[in-house]
Image 1 (tube, rainbow, N blue to C red):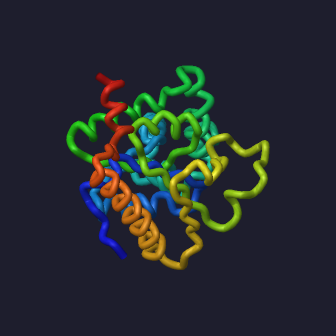
Image 2 (image 1 turned 90 degrees about the vertical axis):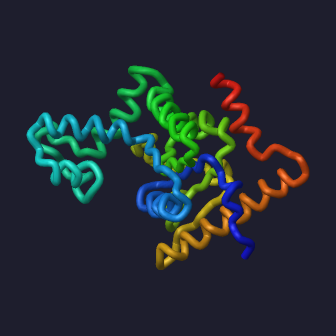
Length: 223
C-alpha cells in the first residue's frame, strides 16, 4: 500500500454513524496515530449535564457513568427520572431550536478555528444532522460514515429522535462497514482511506491545483 502523505492529511474529518457503529473507535485511532484533536458536537451538552448533576449532589465518578459510561439509559433521580440520553437529546434539539438553529454548530466552529489557528487538525466524531454536515463543508473535510449490521439502513421509526437517525451513506466520501471482529481491521480500512485521500490531494498539488480550496474559501469568509 502507498504510504500516507502526512502534509496532505485533511484538516478536518467528519464522522457520522448510529450508536455502537464504531465512530469513537475510529476517532481514537485518528487521534492517537495522526494527532487529530477530537471535537464533539455534544461536548457542550455533556458539560451542561455534568454541571446539573453536580448541582444535584451526584458524585463525580457516578456523573461520568451517567454522561459517558454504562448508565446513559438509567433514570436519574436528581433529574426527575430522566436519563442522560433523554436530557442530552432535548438539549441538543428541542432546547437548541429555542435559541438558534446553528447554536451548537457556532460553538463547535469557534473551537475548530481556535485549533486550526494553532496548526492542529480536528475530527468530529458525532455528526448527526445535515446542517452540521453542510456548515463544515467549507473546510473541505474528509467525510466518513460508519455502520454496523443493517440498522443504519432500516426504515426510520417515526418515534426515533431526529438525532438518532442515520444520514444517507451517499453523502459521505467513504462508507466504513464496521462488521469486523477487531478494532485493528477498522483502523486498517481507515488508513487505506487516508492513503487514497492524501495521494489524491498530492496529485492535485503536483499539477498546480489547490487541494485546500475549501479551507481557503472558509478563511476568506472569516476575514
